Image (cartoon, rainbow, N blue to C red; front, side):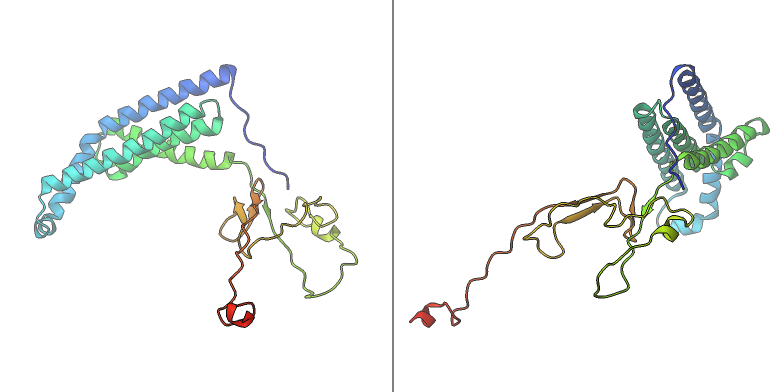
Length: 246
């Protein structure tokens, strides 16, 4: 199994075309956000009316509920849009960055303009809402497909508690499906002199490993020299104490 190389950076006419499509889709998102707003407000008012008794028990009015939900929609849209714009600003020449940024903005619109609101919109604008939902999900799936494959390393321990290594046959393991390379003490290279004075369980930091302890390609294992534990003073009545010397 070979690692998939990341998509190459956009340049020339491809970069201009990608930016033009991004701007057009951004304009479509803004139009959809505006034209679907009345249907969303009508949906929120309907929810408030259906739960009028429950809101009264909480000393809340229907108007407060509608305003709260509308504010929450605005906050979600602003967060998704801000993250998408920052990604586009920082990675505007990266195909994956362009897709992720537009996917975030489209999904922000879809989260604040539900399918019920799209269904309640007049037919000419229903197609716009459907397009936003389909395009947002499609961009997310396409972005996931463009992410390079990640390789994981696994440590195989010996089944013998105490013994001497006479030979290691890795041919069967190397021919197994999905195996890129098998490392042993014969081909792993020199690891350097062992660190002395390390406190047990301290001094090593693993960056990039998951919860199962698997270290992907590009992960980092960094060991630093820890401080030696200070020597404990002798007990008052033990050997070396003043009383013992007396």
